[in-house]
Length: 235
Image 1 (cartoon, one colour):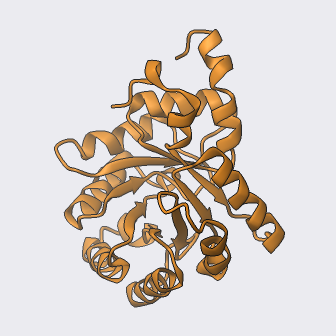
Image 2 (image 1 turned 90 degrees about the vertical axis):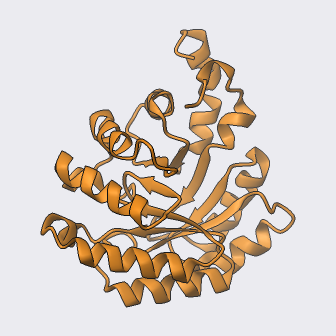
């Protein structure tokens, strides 16, 4: 659990997976985002696909502790397991050091846990040395489904369970807590994406609740909002 009273801007930045994901993103936007990632020394920089990874890798050369990330089967997650594995392997070959796979929500809701187990097994195998994160997209799931999905992530040995892609409705605190409770006693860490407005305040609530990473395009806004939150005693 993070002690938010001891967070400074540098430490908060190291909890941010800075993400530039819009469909209309151009190379200029990616390069600008990488420059911001270098300036703030965020934990990671994410683009929407491995198409951009060579550009990101070049821009972040010399910053080996900033992860280079992308989403797998992003944002819908309903690609076959073999396709997800191929996409993961390709992303790592291009230079990704962290990969976030979108879980097949329909399969989870149908109770087809063997489908999820297979896609997570192949995903982890294909990721090799890259840090693995699996996305539940909790806005479409019941509490029981969230808990079941989180436990499947733990069984597969995935490093992070993540609430959302950030492309649809974000998580509620209650949904996050269901996920957290399901992972008690496991080494799986927690990542939140889709933080709602006002983002600095809501991000801090999730951090206080146990999130170790926040995936967001609003990383700069959240870091720069720390001083105001401290003034009102939230931190």
